[in-house]
Length: 509
Image (cartoon, rainbow, N blue to C red; front, top):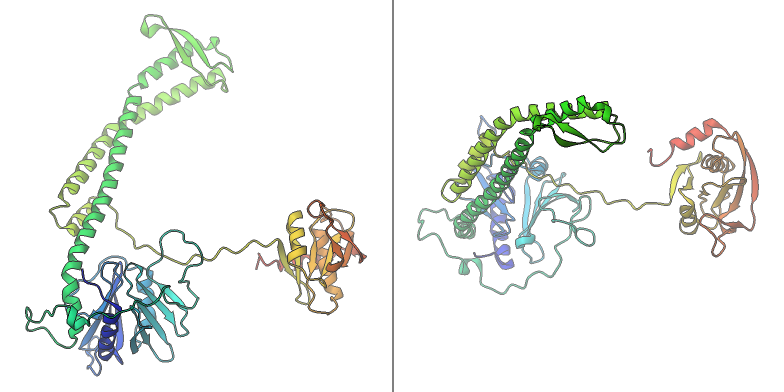
């Protein structure tokens, strides 16, 4: 199959810009999974009084199909897509509908087209026509990503190139050097076979004519393989169900033997006691032959008897329904096998509709891709807000206390800790050379007492020192420090103050 080069994309961009610049977009027609039509009203076309839409429209086809990415004026008829569109196409219609196309241009000599829409509400659509890495990306007026169509599969090293809210950047690598022939010289002209074709966009017509037939065939083959895989998965499930039913039927056929064991145990209950794993009795159903009945040692003799009869009743109920279930499962498997056999000769869409109407397949939902928020790095502290707006950090554990002191506190910050009990280290953040506010020192002291074994005490003593006066002895266990200065603050708890501080916890907000 022929492919568009960077030179061809540039030539198509010039042709399409001349056709669509200044036209208003009236509709985005989704053609999942990777195609769409942008339906514009032709410039100066009169409006239909009934629909208020232009009487003359032009359709721009954009495709990032991995086999044949392309952009061209759409001449041929396109069947409307009748399934779920997916969030990207929906958002595209909402964001671009009613906007005027300002320009359509190639980006940096690459196989990328940029469509700039609107005036005050500016939106940009990027068509990356780079084969298997192709994508459609919607940007805001500042070039930040609003949404994109194709999300990379699986996990990749490093941050993804496309992230909503971030600036769009070109795919990695240099633009392909393109010294080949022009599109008009290298692609066959369909005009001799179709003398009545419009000549409004001759390059677009070449691309459409060359790619449409082969793409349609590839599309049919892809749909056939896809349907075949789905049907085979369902057939495997139906076969597994039948195997399971066969095992259940075999177990149900032993229900009468379970009842006999229950009757034998009932008449020999005096031989059993809690803790027995089995009991041996004379089986009068088999001419008095000895029979060993398994027991649950955790249950009493009466509970074991009840357990056996409950199993008998369950098997009996199961056996009554199994034949009906087996019949339905056999019919399902036969229907699926018939559909699989017909995939080579029948219309794929008809087969899929038949399978769905028979309940053998469910309608395929369009996958909803959304950027996952980047996992926030765990901090070794919880953060609170003092009465004057300063941040107060409280260590989460003994190891976190050490990490907070060494990596998340400055020398002039204030360090606090209970004097008479272990507990969290507390850091009151201090701006520059400013002196800490006395009320915020009380706030930090309340948190030091609360996050200690003395949290329910009405008062306590708190060590207060500058962070630079706190030292970690070499080899000391986590959380153990020494002080080279500071003072002790005798604190009386104020419940209202503590409640205000706890409400300011950044996790709650």
